[in-house]
Amino acid sequence: MRSEAFEFIGSQGVKLAARLDRPKAPPQAYALFAHCFSCSKDTLAAARIARALAQRGIAVLRFDFTGLGHSEGEFANTNFSSNIDDLIHAADHMRETGQAPSILIGHSLGGAAVVVAAARIPEVKAVVTIGAPADAEHVKHHFADDIDTILKDGEARVKLAGRPFTIRRQFLDDIAGHNVLDAAAALKAALLVAHAPLDETVGIDNATRLFVAAKHPKSFLGLEDADHLLTKAGPAEHAARVIAAWSERYAFVDPLPEPPEAPAGANSALVQETGKGKYLGWAATGEARFLVDEPEDFGGLDAGPAPFQLLSTALAACTTMTLRMYAERKDWALGRITTIVTHRKEVRGEGQPERDVFSRAIRVDDTLEPEQAAKLVEIANKCPVHRTLERSSDIETAFET
Image 1 (tube, rainbow, N blue to C red):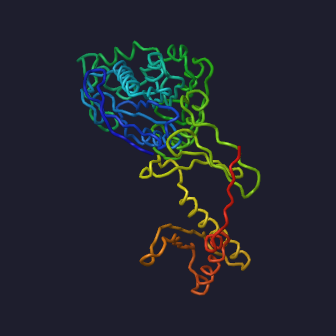
Image 2 (spheres, rainbow, N blue to C red):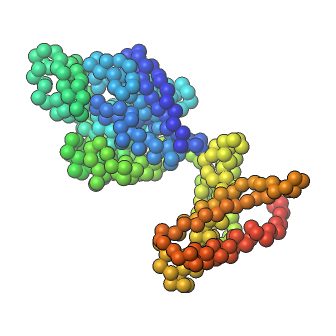
Image 3 (cartoon, helix red, strand yellow):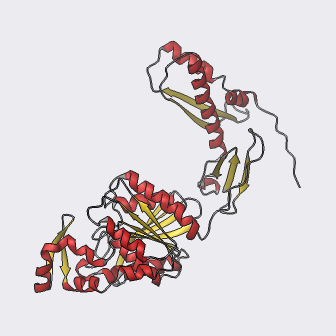
């Protein structure tokens, strides 16, 4: 995954701090993330979901709304409408750089904002809300004790998540003028409503109202073990996995080609170019499908293991499996076995050809007797891949037409 920090101009003419998390392979879709009320792009939920989606092929732009996080501007001069306008400016920036968002994701009040903003971003094919209220006025519960002061004096200094903010009457007037449920009903994009049933900040009834208001296609994701802010890593990762799989159906605009079928035979493998990047390819063997690539230093994207990494992996896998088989035959109650293999090129003398050297380290989650450790090293040297590498091989090549 790559992560790039930058700035763009928001709806009030000030610089907004942003970050684009993107996969190493060419993105299959771009998403725009709206954070929760008075939060920032760097909250645990925003960061974890963006990074997890990037690892699954979706590039995510997250940014701080005006007056929050590292963005310029005064929070007191913002409202729900300005947040929506900031989202539009973020989408415009993405479009200008050839990365228009096909997915909008919003957390809490940010979820309500993306539902309303979707109509103004033509490329959007999918909208995701996470713990979102069904109406913008729901946010008033954060400063309910200060509303009379705001109405009387025009503003009040309130505490939100332990930090002081100024809320002005224009904010109250603005949230009263938005109907999130009408926007949900008018959505031209697929909707995924994600919510924690035990959310104590935004009750689950909000998810019900959003879901009922929207037309199909729509889906619901229950985040059973999550709190409102998704402070646990597990629920955030789970949400990202589901969002990525769900979005593939509706919003992937530049998907990788489908992985090929593996050739017949248990010991056969195939690698087919994807057409994305210089060396990126699908590998298929047995039931496994995965990407292979070269490092950036060699002109690749580093989006998958390189050939010698796969060769090192084969030796490590064979060693670990061979040791486990031996331990079972000997009834040794070994703990978890780990094998680390590193490959390097080495010249052992002037005028001598370059040699491939595989350095192997074996670890066992147990205390072994010296005789046991020595025996495991002996057995490792007899694993099939070790022997194949040691004695070299014959390679037959034919060109098929």
